[in-house]
Image (cartoon, rainbow, N blue to C red):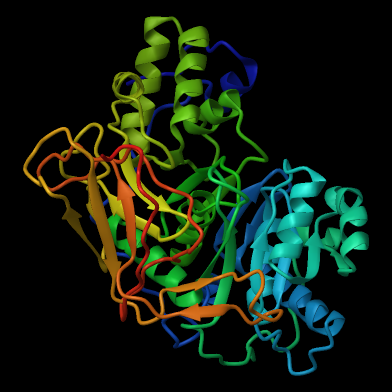
Length: 478
């Protein structure tokens, strides 16, 4: 039986001192949680499922633990404030854009859910963006209001004053237990599928960032596909260390666990020391899922090499990771093979690589239980189909074009800067969601090396229709 050895920093020592390892009781092959949602609409937002998990712990952050009931009631109260501010007596914002700037904690979820409860479109902002960038996102998205937690009010005040947009502070009470809201069970029914849900901005590698508008149907397709592919259940506990203005942090790491009634442990920002403490610690709830980007894994490896040098410490770390953690995922960039192999040696886990884009959402993933091919991002997620388009499809080592397609009638809405009035984005019916990837394909898999930032944008793929997009010529192709 392994016992905790002397660690190299006191907080980890306190967390797991004299602790015996207990095997993780969940199973990747266990049935998904099937508690019925409060709302019968399959495309309804995640908050409509919250009361089915009411007293379960949804979030753990620097402020404490928050139940699904807390999230729901805080969000409902804030959504009513939004509707009052924007003079929507019927409680429907009718897809008005709601920008919000919050820390990686309960305030983010409350702002997001409040936007959706009111029928608005959530536009998450990022605290490390300069004021000029924040101004661009608020103006470009035509946001009708900006929400902010207390620590960002001074940053945003000159921006909203210049734009003439109201600023609504989140009350400090969001960090505590929420009283029951009157009418909490009487939310209006809406046709969610084609209603706009969220605008995420591209990274802007080929110009100014461009807003990608996903519908609630798009988000549901991404979330349920990942829930099925990665066997999410209510027993999962994920450690969240990523920013919350990209698909990886918002959909994969936040909406997926909240969809099934699982728990999300949120750190304010990435810290290699804190991540190792959380992964190895014995406090409840215990982490069993971790997702990050390659640079984070490289930093965790570097910290391990500097701080965990004793053989018995290394053996302990590997034993903890093998017994307690069921899934570790890498994405958002190509994972260098040396990092993958080093992480496998440290933890016993072969990182699951997957691929998605802001423009199309999540598209490909390695298998949960079958062998994973290093340097590959796997096969299509549920409801996504891909095909190779190349003059020499059998020639190895050449870049290929992949067409990714979902069966959605209206996959995309792109933000027109000149032709659409406020809160009325242009809809584009199209035929095949496409993106270019550079691939030295293994049988049945895809390896991603490049993706373009584009002027016409495609949102997540959903069963029921198609969306098309052509990218500019790739420098990887002749």
